[in-house]
Length: 69
Image (cartoon, rainbow, N blue to C red; front, side, top):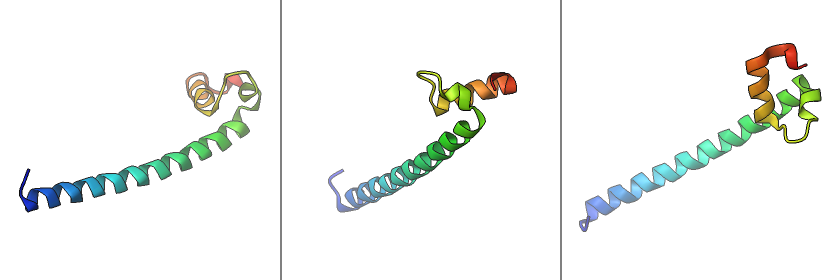
């Protein structure tokens, strides 16, 4: 790992990995916001229950369907 080419390659790969991580983090935040909005609209009563967040509500809605509403 001591030669310059290997270090440059490693630095480039780490930079690309960091860019990808930042991109995916941004997309995850967008998807979480969308899921939050959709579950607030579709499962108001369920979301009002203590401890039920957007991911739990979405999972229950997918499994049980409209029976939760």
